[in-house]
Amino acid sequence: MKRVNVILLVVAFLAASNMGYSRTIAPPYEVGTWQGFKTAAVTWTHDDDCSNQLAIAIPLYNQYGMKATFFLVTDWVTNWTPWATAACQGHEIASHTVTHSRLGGMSIANQILEYSNSQTTINTNCSCSDCLTIAYPNCANGDYATLAQYFIAGRNCSGANNTTTPGNFFEINSYICGSRGTVKTTADFITRFSSVQTAGGWLVLLIHGIDSDGGYSPLPSTVLTGAVQYLDTNKNNFWVATFVNVACYIKERDDVSVSETTVTDTAITLAVTDTLDNTIYNYAVTLRRPLPAGWASAAVTQNGHSVDSLIVTVNSVNYVMFNVVPDGGTVVLTKTGQSQAPAAPTGLTAAAGTGTISLDWNNNNESDLAGYNVYRSITSGSGYSKLNSSLVTTSAYADNTVINGTTYYYVVIAVNTGNYESAYSGQVSATPVGGGATSMHVHSIVVTTVPQGAKLKGRAIVVIKDNNGNPVSNATVTGTFTGSFNETRTGTTDATGTATIDTYSSYQKSSVTSIHFCVTNVTGSLTYNSGANVVTCADWQP
Image (cartoon, rainbow, N blue to C red; front, side, top):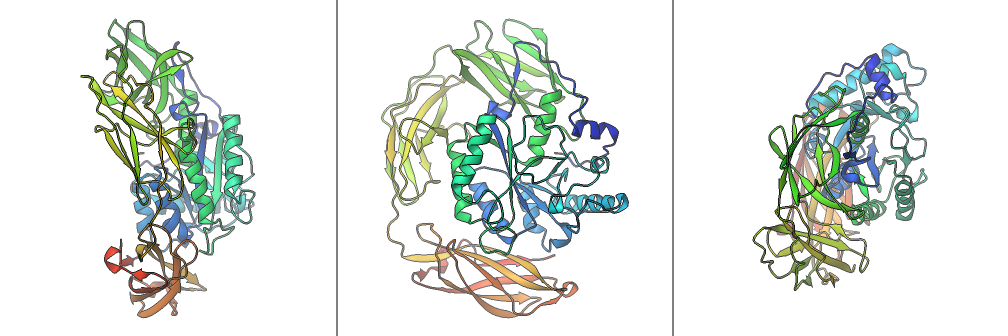
C-alpha cells in the first residue's frame, strides 16, 4: 500500500461498520469470497514485540511463503530495524498503542494520542507499509468513531471465528494461543482450521510469547511449526494473509462492481470499480467467468499490464480466474491458446537426500508448452498442494522444505501457453532421512534490548543447528558484547536450539546507543563448525 495520511471520519466509520457498500456484478462474473476462491481465510497475529517473533516466527512464515501481522507497543520497541525488514518482506506492522494502556474509560483526547502517535512512529520506522489496523491492549476497545479516524479495523480476543463480512470491523474476533489460551497444541490449531473451513469464514489467531522468550501465554515453536505446515499442506483450501489485507479484501469484495464495456469475438473489456478510497483500498480481488464459446483460453491485462490468470474447471465448466484491483485501470480479457491440453508428464522419479527430495521427469514435447507445476502431499493419492510459485521451466525440481523421516507424495502436471493443464503424472514418493549429525553451527542471531526496571540490558538470541538442519539442544554458546556493553557471556540452547544471552550490566536507556554481539565458541555433543555459520555477529541500534 502507498503511504497515506488516513482521514476517516463519518464515511470511514460507516464502512468499518459494514454500511454503505455499493456492488453490481454483471453475470456471468463471480467474485471470490476469499482471494483465489479459497474456502476460508486465516490470519496469524502477534502482540508485544516478543523476541522469538523475530528469531523464530518470521523465518518460519517466510519459509512457507506466509505473511503475518505484528501489533507493536511502540514505547516497548528498542530496535526498529528488524521490524522494518519484516515490513519490506510483506508482513504487516500495526498498532498495539503507545503504552499498552487500557482504552476503555480513557478520555478521547488520550485515545487520540495513543492512536496518532503509535501510527506515526510505525509509519516513520517501517517505510514499506502503512499502519492501518490496531489490536486493543487487554482486549478492551476504545471509542469506535475515534478509532475510525486512524484505522480501518481493530482486533479483540473474544474467541470466535469471523463471518465472511463482519458486522463491525472494529470488533474482529481472535483466538488466544499458548499456555493461557484455548489453542495450545497442533491438534487445537487443526480443530480451529477445520471449523473455519466448514464455516467458510475468517480465523484470526493471537500469539504473544514463543518458547521461553518471556512473553505472555507462550506457545511452543514446535506447535507453531506443525500448524504452519498443516496450512501449507492444505494451501488449496486456506488463504493466509495479513490482518489489513483480509480487511481490505472484504471491503473491496463487498463494494466492487464489474461490467463489460466492449465485447468482440476475441476480446472483452471490463470496468472493475468500487466507491472506496483508492489510496487505502488498492488490494486485488479475485474474479472469474466462464470462457466464452470458442475460447480455448484467455490472457488478462489491467491498465496495459499482464495479470496472472488461470484456467480452472468448476462443475465441468472452464473458467478464467484472475486478480484485479478495483479502480486500477481497464481490464481486458483476450482470446488465446490452443484447445488441447498437454499430455501428462511421464517418467517422474524422486530421490531423497538429507532435508531435500529431488524430482526428475521426461520433457514434454508440445510446441506450446509453458512449464510445469509440482504438487506434494503427505497422503498417498490425495491432498496435493502446489509447491512452486511460478511455472517450473525445466523437467526437474528440488523440494527443500521437507522434514527428515516424513514420507512425501508427488505428482507433476504440464501447462501450455493457453493455461491449460494436463492430467497428473504418475505419483512417486520419497522419505528424506538425515545422516548422523556430526557438527553444529550458528543459524541466526538477533540482538535487542530488554527492560530492567528503568534501565536496559542487552540481549542476543542465538539459534544453533546441526549439519542436517535440526536444532541442537544443550549446547553452550559463548559470545562477546561490545559497544554500549563490554562483556563476555554464555547461554544454553533449549529444545528449539535457541540460547537467550543477556548482559550482566544494565544502563539508562539514553546510554544504550549500540550493541555488537559475536559468537566466539559453541560447545556440546557435536563439533562446532564456525565455517558453516550463517552469521557470526549481529548488531543493534535504536
